Image (tube, rainbow, N blue to C red):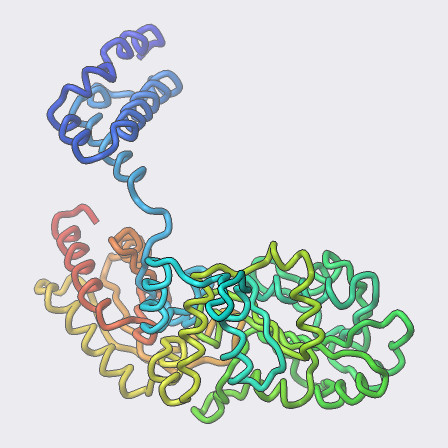
Length: 478
């Protein structure tokens, strides 16, 4: 087609007004805001014009078909009307999946969110005095009760918590830290960069694999503000290693009058070794061992909402509260409501493990996982009368995720789906495009569904999605 012919075709494109008069678009105007309908029409027409002018040799008469244009308009309209933040089915087996929203909230936290967000509340109102209050009191008492800390402060995330502590207590002064603890976690959160941005000065000591008490002692001078310990939650150094215990650091700090801060990262409230998992330092133990300040996340092993929690000596935490930067990092009513509801479950460890999804998924017995996998495989096979798919239950490994327990592979059971001439990537794409999206993983040309991270209501969703996929295979459209 010549450029002249392309321009002739352009004149045949229906106008916006003409498309608005079609029955399908009139119906759309009744269901969607008119502004979105107009945007979808104009976007579709502009796309056709651009394609025709830039690649007119590949243009076909069907590109001018009104029914095809309307189909494109409706697809664009659906995309504009859809939420970008959507619910998804996590079949990856990664419990604290950062890309999929990290920890699921317990039912109690969700109910509390509905109440607090649907009503006015006393976020910054003191009901005793009738005067303005502080939002930071709402989770402080339960945190102090559970951990034994003198004081507590909640900010928007743990990176903010670390930054605030360093800026408040060490701006313009040195913070001593072992070279082996200068970690980087997801999203390019790097301890040296956070320290530099806070105004504190990094004082590296020891070697990557070995640090000794004498390294801390010799590094302390008149410029030293803090001794810092960072829990290497997202990696491990093994072999010829040496690390200074928190107790020894506290003893050095007390002797020299230097506060000790530990960033725990994940912040576990329960001794996981009781469930056959690798032991993680708990928040309570860290406080008992004498750390002056402890920081950790709310949405990792704690199993609550995104938050950064600062615990420790009252005078140091109070200084953090008074820092003007605290306002930029302040936590909102939704996070406070969900956090307080989650923390209250920890008053009884058995209740916490049963009702907090992150903990429940961590300790689910192997036998239960096997039963779930067999049930899910059966549901998928029900709609596969022609045996187009090969569906079987296999053993595998789940991960904790979120930088927590990085070396731990949790034995699990997965449902592996494949088939002769059926690419695992095709299955993955089909399920990812489902509503809601189903996110799994691919191994050895099979699509895997790890049942550890599935909720009971997800089984029917997955069955329906595979039913559609099988119909597409039968129709030759998959």
